[in-house]
Image 1 (spheres, rainbow, N blue to C red):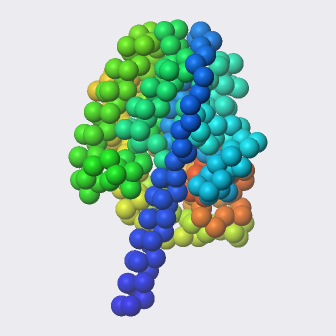
Image 2: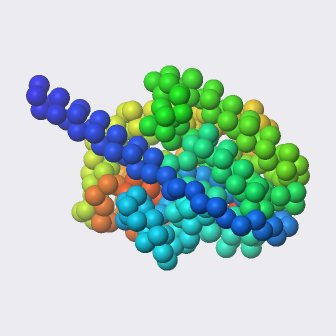
Image 3: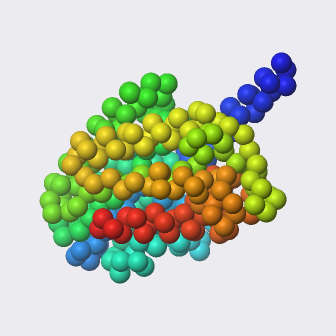
Length: 289
């Protein structure tokens, strides 16, 4: 019985650590106002979108100036050159203003949209705005915002309210902009709830079931779809078509990394997308631009 209890405790600690990675947000700094080109795209999202290198996330807590050298940032938020927004720009040829930020929730995104307006990135001639948030609402960030994360219905209601507020901000400034709600890559296996946290033997991902993680992924997915319906925006389905590319997929098919991981190609941060995962997201979003 003690062994089983230890296993449960280990799973809980791992999931708590995963949520903590999501919660590592960059501090905002002022930026000068300058109008982005007409027909541009504004992309708001969390760390699955910004996808910075993990060492920078850690260093950003103690030495932000050092952590942000040599990598893209927007208003102090760490990003990376091959994340979904920048890959989207390459695929479409459109100017994309990347307002993603590690730790972002639907609530904190509202402040990011305000800054996008203030800096001139979101304006009357903006073509599209992509909103890619959700899962952080179910973790520590949601708690800090006063949401009861033990009640999925309450989290969804709060998220829908935030997305309505976001849509109002966008439409007030850019009435012709197309608002797009984007889903998230599958992290755990949707059937077995396996999260493969240890990927060190080629094509032999290892881990254990975390039903809570699978449930949170499903809750977030449902909330995103509900929000899209409420604000009259198309929903880019990412979770279901990426189900075969979760952390437990074979190495070359894996789009989300584990925690101890030497076999997932081209990833920047544990528990986050590989370049192939970001490329898939960008390709799907491009269909709606």
